[in-house]
Length: 486
Image (cartoon, rainbow, N blue to C red; front, top):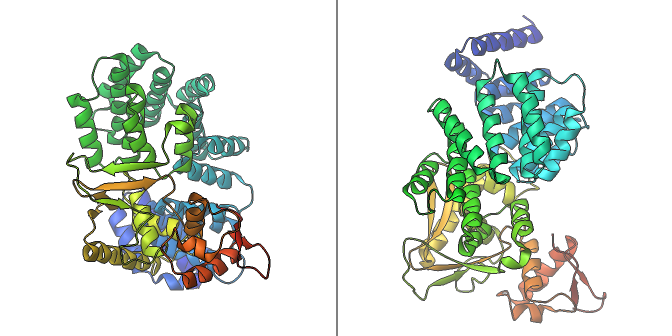
């Protein structure tokens, strides 16, 4: 039997098993294959089958040689690979791959989904607009695009347009997609809430809650979220009510991290709780979420630094940890372990998976399913050793969703607006900017504010200049100007 016929038959058999819901047998057969032997022309189909079976990492391993191997990749492989790694949490890398793809429907759709992950709904709306202009889209693709467009319109406060599109999509799905209908009605309820029609919102969400029950747990969380917020805004419950406490508890138990983040932000706005607003702001690493907060409340409403104390204790102790100033900690200043510490601390809500850590600390490195995560695990282990050796007043927690850093009861963390840096050079540039060393500074000036030796600074200046963060004032002087901070 020829190789082409062999793999064609394997793909047909696997598709048949999946279509008849024999998932376990299909997965067993797929894992028995030597993926290094799969011919290039069949890798995309094999990766697609692995994705349908929920094996995203396996799909990445299958398709990676087509994208980063010898020769120029087919654009279909490029887009499918970007879609796979986006699902893993490698959104930075997915975006860079999509920039290499032609402007076809799948490129726009996948780019929009990346923007939605970053809470960048304005850019996502533009990408979805481009996507939906194409003719002859697949029925499922178009449905996904139209539904996500409605969500973007609501987030961008285009309520009338969103309402019209909800009605149009309801007519199209009335007889064959009950799950989508529930989600559309939930989005309609959001519009009622955001336009102040609270009675309509409450009635709709209560009706949806009865219809949904436990059959659509994910949708039920969103329905409960907006129902509670509507009742709170209407004055029917308080922010300390048992209903809200139970909602937080159940959401945390089910890893609904982004839902908790937005719920807390909405809660802070309704109650005009500035302390809670600051907590959400400094515990959120997403640039566009923060920009939205600035637009709603003004940039001046949020301080440059924030003291984060564990809520389990109000005891005041003389234990403050500033992530920018670690002169007493045996850790390479601004290098990977230090930046890892700041990175994990920068999100109070969503634990950091190893993949997400890699994507943010090393955005320019190619992700390898076999080696990249080992690099992250080594850094995690080193960070744990630093915390233990230095007796730092923080805990590094390992959860089913990833890693968290938390202050111990009584300890205060000093949080800064910028806590995520992809390189030491970027971090040091930010430090210089914060300390006001923008023009005509020397290594001795930098030493006075940042705990590096003069020799270390000269070495850092060379790499910072190569990366475009600083420039020498003249070739014969030791003075530098800060050129840019990205």
